[in-house]
Image (cartoon, rainbow, N blue to C red; front, side, top):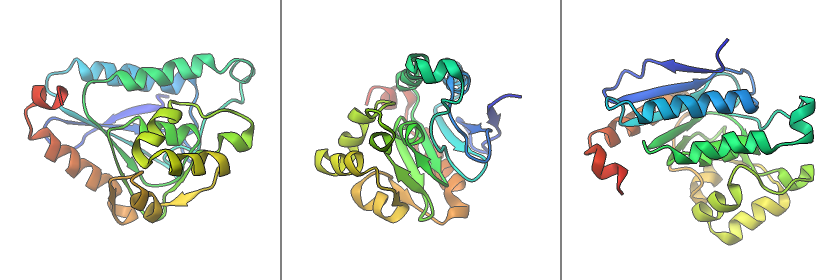
Length: 202
């Protein structure tokens, strides 16, 4: 069964991708490869101007899955697929309805915009697990929240909710939990009204 599904968005020029590894949507090499492949296909589709990434289940993504022997021994293949996500040309909006932890936070920050809710939880918990920050977070997190706030989140591994995430600039919109996806789609539809070449070059 596919771990990433294309879902009808209901909006012109907006594609909706959904992670389907409920309830926690743990990330592994296969899922990230499939997601990167689908984003590459949408990049080549002239009818698509904006992509929304959502997830079923309780979490947006609770982090990386290193349960496989090979993944635990060598995380490089996982990171190789993760880095592909930063190469897509079409704007990407993440609908973060639940926890985005570790690599899941990295996935959310690979998007250009994030819509969240008060119940969402965000954590860069790598130091607590004995790892350096992965998934590009050492670049994306300071860029969004500033070096000091990023250092605080990295060093402590603390979890913050949606309201604090909005306050520090980690997410762009805070909406009720049952409106996260529809609000992300509405934002994408608004972006899709702009000239695609102008957006791509901005």
